[in-house]
Length: 260
Ligand code: FE
Image (cartoon, rainbow, N blue to C red):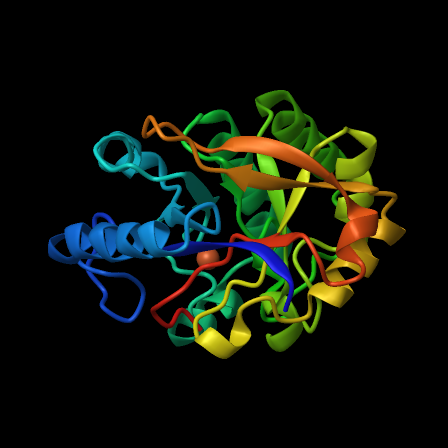
C-alpha cells in the first residue's frame, strides 16, 4: 500500500473494568509489548509500538503508571465512556434513549478536552466518536467546539483522521470536515489512522482521508519516528502532496481486538 510505517496500537487494559471484547487484560500487556518489539526489530524504522488508552478521569493515575512503565512510541488517547456508560459500545446503545443528545455531545467534548490537557497522549483518537451511531446534536455546538479545538491546539497533541467511521452507522470519517477545518485554522497537526481491527483494514480508505484533509486546508501531516532511548516518538511533518500517491503515509491505527 506504500505506507511509510505502521503503528500497532492495541487497547490498553480497560480500567477499572475488565472486558475481553474491548481490551487485553493486564496479564497480557507484557506479551503484547514483547510481540510488537520483535516486529520492530524485524522491520526497523517501519513498525512502531503504540497503544490506545482510555481517558477516564477516575483512572488517570493508573493509566499514567502503565504508560510510564512500558516503552510505547506513541499513545492514542480516546474517550469511550461517559461515566460508566460505554457510549460507543453497540451493547449499550439503548442508553441514548434516556439522554438528551446535546448533553451527551457536550459532556463528551469536555472529556476529550481534558484528555488533550492530561499530557498522557501523543494523538487524540476518533475526535468526534460520539457521532458513531448517527445521533446528532440538535444545534451546532459552536462555543463548545471552539473551546475544544482551542484546548487541543494549546495542548499540542496530534489528531488522527480516522477512517473507521466510514464503516459505522454514521458513515463518515472522524473527525468531520467542519471540525477538521477548525483544527486546521487552529494549526493542529493531523496524522492518519485506519483503526484497523483486522489485517485487511490497515490503511483502509486513506485516499478518502487524504482528500478530506486537503479539503479542510491541510497540506502537511505528521509521521512518527521512534527514538532509541525509550521515549515517545518524534513528530515529523510530511507534505500531504506525497500522500496522495499512496506513498509515505504512516498508519498509527489500532490492531488486534474487536471494538465494534
Ligand atoms: Fe477507540
